[in-house]
Image (cartoon, rainbow, N blue to C red):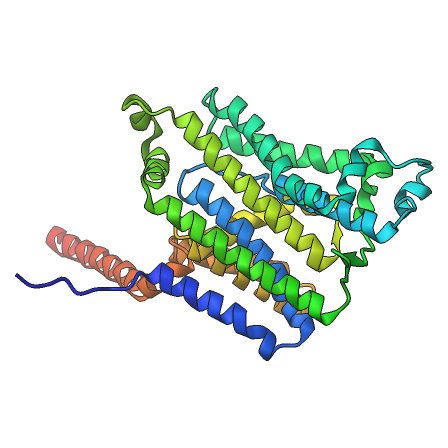
Length: 364
C-alpha cells in the first residue's frame, strides 16, 4: 500500500509568507511606508472577522464598519483624555461643554478603555444578532439591515458634536500609555503589536474552523435548514460567530486609531463597510489567508494608484474587482487555477463552434 505524499496547506503557506513579509518590512522600508502597512494590517484583521461570518457561515454584513468604528472610538476616547490632561477635550470646549460627560470619565483608565474596545462591539453584535437570527432574518434582508445600521451610527456621531467631535471626529492625540505617538520607537512598537494581533487572531480563527464548531459554521452556510432539522440551534452559532467577528473588528479599530491618529464618522459609514467586503472577495473568502492578502494588496494598490493617478484610482480598483470576479471567483488564492480556467473556457467555446459547424454541414 503506497503512502500518501504529504502536501502543505496552500493557505497556511500563504499566511506564513504574509507574516514573514510583514515582520521584515521595517528593516528596509521608510517609517512612512511601515505606518501604511500597519494601517493595512488593521484592515487585514477586519477581513479575518468578515471571512468568519461570510466566507465560513454565509452571513453577508454590509455594515461591519460599525464595529470597527466603535472599537476605534473607545480607544480614541482614552487617547483624547490622555492628550487633554486635566482640561476638557478641545472639541467639547468649542461646543460649550463645561464639564466632562459622565460616560467619558471611565475612559481615562486604559484598562477600561481596552475592555470596552471589545465589549461595546460584542454587546451590540449580540443584541443585533439575537434579534435578527432568532427571527430567521438572513440573506439580503440582513445585509440591508446591517447597511442601515452603519448609516444610523454615522448620523448619530455627526449629530453629537459635543460628545464625539461631530464630522471632524476624534484626533490630535499625543501619547499612548505615557509614550509619545510621534516617537519612531512607539510607532514601531504599535506596528509589531498589530502584527502579533493579526497572527493571534488568524490562529484563533484557524483553530475554530478546524474544530467541530467550524464544520457547523460551514454546514450553516451550505444548508442552514438541514442543520436546523438535525437538531442544532443555528441562531446560537450565528450569534456567536457574529459576536466574534465584531470583537475582531473592534480590536482592529483600536489598533487603527492608535497608528493613524484619527477616527471620523466617515470611517464607520456604508462605503468603508462595502470596501471591507471587496477585500475578502478579491482575496478569496473561506480561506482566512485570502482575505488578509486581499486587504493588504487592495489597499497597497489603492495607495500606489492614488499617488500616481489620483483621479483614476477608484476606476482601477473597480477594474481589479471585476477581473477577479469574472476570472477568479475563488479570489487571488485561486490564481494557480486561472490558466486552466481560461483554457477550459476557450476549449468549451471552440467545442460549441465545432458543434454548430457540424450541425450546419449536416443540414446542408
